[in-house]
Length: 183
Image (cartoon, rainbow, N blue to C red; front, side):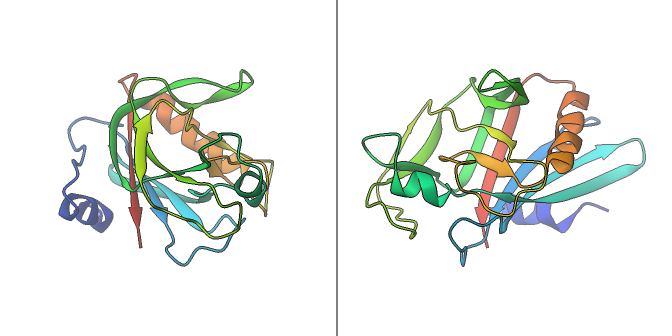
């Protein structure tokens, strides 16, 4: 049976990837009532394998950590990914030259710029471009976002991220799409 999360994605007007095995639907779910500096969002992967539909979900953050909100690395403010679907923007590559992750090298992504240096996410005007918004991991089992995200989508747990990357390496295509929704 097709997972209901795919119906939600489709009802928002986004493409669902259904053909072939390991054709990954990578879906971030941002918690609208999110608390600053917490891993209170979800990263989901929905795909089919030889047995049928599979849904995996893990704790993550889709928001920048408090450190980067208070100390933006960009003069225009800290990046916050705009909900939407970003087709084929990721490839497997090295995050900061250190380990395999999904890196934004194949397409543009939209971000809001939060420049007032507080804990509240400010989502005003959006801009799109190549900002290095990667999907990567925090520490072994992190409880606070802190410096782990300056706008990236970040897994709280290293073992969860490793499982995610194993799935990515099963996908027969070299580009990955990402869909961010809010609940």
